[in-house]
Length: 384
Ligand SMILES: Cc1ncc(COP(=O)(O)O)c(C=O)c1O
Image 1 (spheres, rainbow, N blue to C red):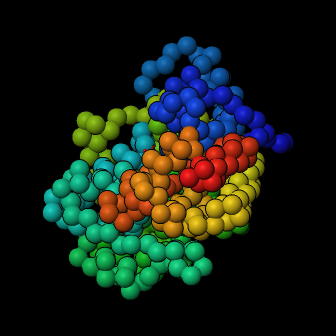
Image 2: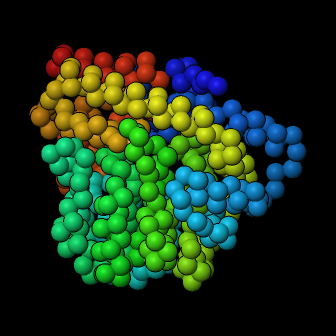
């Protein structure tokens, strides 16, 4: 079966956050959802569910739990039980619940910066100290783990929030790096909160490794957060899940919904099951298309605007662009919004002090849209 990722779908007027925030003449390439139609298996399952006219509170069916167990075994060789799974209305509530559940005000949590803003901000919600371990691109642009800096950064921390694959750099941690991270976390007795929401979107034949799959001992100190939402473009259905193999950790985590993290959206559960059960071919085709977009974007930027620093992302549909050599008189986000009519995510969303000259570009769109956005960016610099 083939899927048409080149089809341009007008999302204006659909209540899309991405397509509503900016003026109609602005091309939105910011928030992390894609402009593609969902897999046919998802549409069919949602339609079928609507044939039943009652839409009360939902709970995950046994078949969905079994599907996730099978997914973890087949894709990652990770054996979990259906009871290890906790459904959540998002990964963001999940890492906030974990911080609240397992840390006390004043405790320190390590993160690797730059990083997705809700992760950057979460420690502050719970009066935690934040330790920023800076990720650097390295000579090959693969953002290698600096083991010594990581070990030093983790010392004295109560938890480490891993974002793998990493937003905004697109880094995919290798198995060897994850093993080193896990060993250091075990040595320092640090809880691991692992945001793996982009785990399916890895390029160039790479494999995603859930850190908890490395060993039962590591799993027992890890809260793994996953969702079908990024891969299958169903983020608006607000459905995710945690996998927590340690029963004591799991019940403590569950106890910290605190009246704020409620049950999960009925359609999100239906769509998640349909995605995992019947969306594999669509997902594989999507990853090929996104990898093609990635290559097109890197080649185009290097040819037309070599001053922009870019390291080919290893995963996701997000590119982290270093605009410092453009010497713009303002933030690149503001410049490109006004002069190119392209809305990107501002670098200072990803760190308070280090990343103001960066932007993040969402290439989860048709190739034609991507080409148009890159051309508008290029022309804005030619006119300057
Ligand atoms: C790394 C990462 N974690 C979490 C989220 C948000 O997940 P959710 O909508 O399930 O809260 C995103 C969305 O962009 C993300 O990139």
